[in-house]
Length: 458
Image 1 (cartoon, one colour):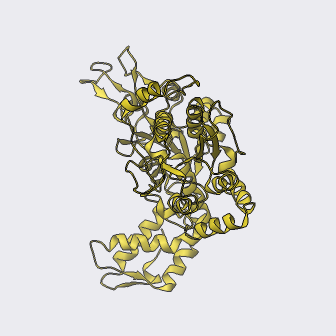
Image 2 (cartoon, rainbow, N blue to C red):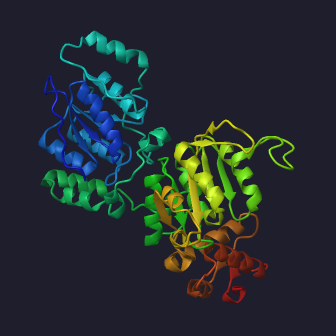
Image 3 (cartoon, rainbow, N blue to C red):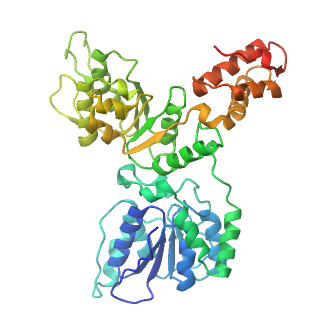
């Protein structure tokens, strides 16, 4: 966790703002702009750290991100309103005013700095001689929205920022143990504030994988996977999803897309193992008419079709070496060249890739390009096998059974049937479980209860 950071500025010491966000890059941009406007700035990466700073010195304003790693932002906002009624509290996402809460006389400056940070515009520097009218002239025409703190989006302000403006890296400390340093900070708070923090923490349910679209399970491995998805989904970072066949790699990719700012844009899937090698390049990059035998008309490639959205390269380990070089070029330059065309085309696409193969071993054997591997594995993820999360088997089986019961009579498992399912090794993982449940549903015929006799494995 970052230690307290105080930026010395020229001008009145009454201009103090506390920036509370887990996004280091966003805080830095906001702090630079406010510093140039003669504000004194402090930064906190979590709610507990913010409360600790306020315990020392109350700020004139607090800009609050809507996702924090340790406290629920909405509950924290209500606590701050009660404990610090004179604090101008601004949530970076919301657009409506909240009646009755305190407002800084310089709120227009805060909103201006916030807009610049969200759009990644460079900081400004205002000297003591800068006329107030000049500052207002620079700010007013922008039509800045007036954020407030209610109705906070639980997914966080990351989702409302442009993907290309997201920081490319995730601090390793966050990935290793995101709450360890924050927990230490909480324990060091003064008694009254510590009690308030603990009261807020009681209202926060432990995050579950069911909060991630398409992902089910409460095992430790699934919770870790869900946390990684939340961290990287809002960014443009390339993700490599590794895991055994049938473990849900495409579900992870879809969740990353649905939780990103690109959710309303295309999600294109290319199975590199299902398309013949001779056609894969044209499928990805597209081609002009007459570019090769059989190209009777021009065709847009999958990469171009995914413009503004996400391209999921499934079974990337099956991609031919010659094509890997062209994909690497696209990742580095953001440009593609259709077969038969001389001019490159710029495309804004986020790349997600998946494989069940040991790519590190393939790199060592020369079967996969090392430079492409490291370019894909900016943020690697591992989907666990079903055997590694056996405690999730009953809930998954019941989920599949409920899905089958939507268009037919509902059925349930008896306890022995569930025990049989849990004891199996599941070499085919979740996909195999779904097939076994469907087969058992059919074999049970008109009976509403599925017994162990209807469950068998191929």
